[in-house]
Image (cartoon, rainbow, N blue to C red; front, side, top):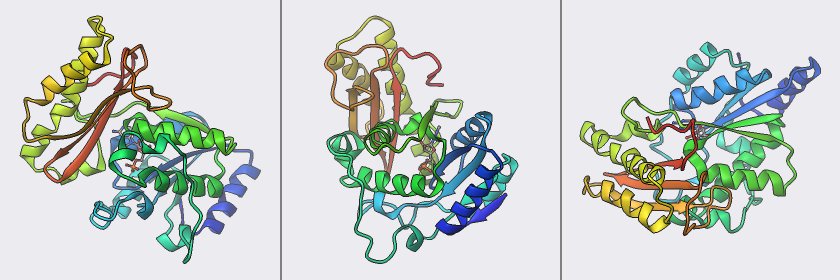
Length: 287
Ligand code: AMP
């Protein structure tokens, strides 16, 4: 496994791989890897090409009062895990490599970037779209692998890839969960044992909404009410949003149908967690 820290080194290495006839599967991450990230690596491996993983905590997607400086960093451990997964190439640039002094070019995916997390975290998706565009420009992968866990991010990036004619195939992989339903997240390590217990209410709310959908409910307000009832059982959990939206546009739906996205964000103490499910879609078990 090779580790590259410069864009030119990464380009040279990928050009070599391409010359040897291999396609590239790319997995962008912010590190502090867990089994959710590794499921993307495994999907990339299964797709047959060489696998490249980026590890970069992207400053532009964090708000001024968010956790950029305390975001978990575990580079050595991450590399050991990726080595075990048979990854060919790791890209771990410093901030100045991707944002040279005076960088003033950003990618703005208008409209959709202001919905869900984009509404709660102004500028978040501008940062995400910008860094992923840079990473795609460097890696020029055939396929890039993302988690359904970040459903709004997937919608924004799909739109960006389409609008900018980037020609990268986005592959979305199911959310990996703990046995009790909690979606894996690098931020779960912030939780105290009591908060870890409270956090279960997120997947529980989604499960209630899925159950209600399975029972025939299609009215978005009624589905939402079912989720809110579940959330009320953990009064310490502070809801940011619970939304029933179109998975592609992230616009509110009044009526749900198969594939409608139900997304939640909530604060557990000082930790903000997100989760979601696609209603009625098999292969998206909530645990
Ligand atoms: P992050 O390091 O949080 O930026 O995540 C990198 C990639 O891993 C993103 O595409 C995430 O959606 C994906 N990911 C994070 N958590 C999970 C999970 N529990 N299951 C599947 N994919 C995940």
